[in-house]
Length: 193
Image 1: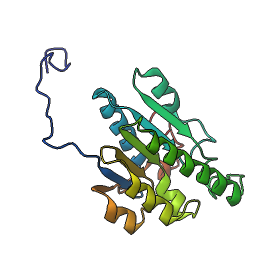
Image 2: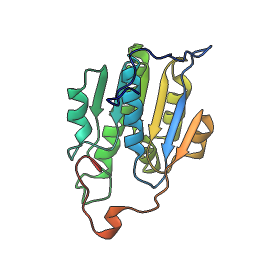
Image 3: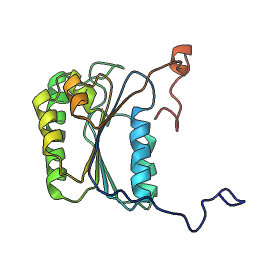
Image 4: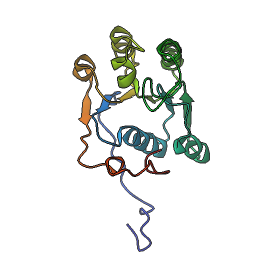
């Protein structure tokens, strides 16, 4: 770093001997699964990679990443396909509607994978969608197996299925140690959404 805290103009770039796409699972009950995936999108942006994010359970309440991504000069495409978190926080939509939206999202995933237009595909909250039976295990496993060899695939959400973890190259579990919500503090913009 130089005196102003910015990266130096000339820096060595690491290049792997063999490029390959990775399957990354980010799961657990702690805060930060989507945040970690968005960090990967930011990092991919820095490498000039093309990114697609498909949010399975989000779409009924504003999230800062929607406008944040628009403001970045990056090749990031974001799709919010859900109607919120099924069965919690007073979500009014019946399970059938959540399931129909999640099935549409699965079709969108297949379309984006087949397009060859993306280097990184993030399936935000797909693990939750699977746990709630909005998508089927075979659908998720088929997506992982059909992933183009150079495409990175990230699957986020609580309760990742053991078979999904087994197929992953990298799997991380985020554990809650402490959360402001437990102290009665409402979710805060820029941190929680």
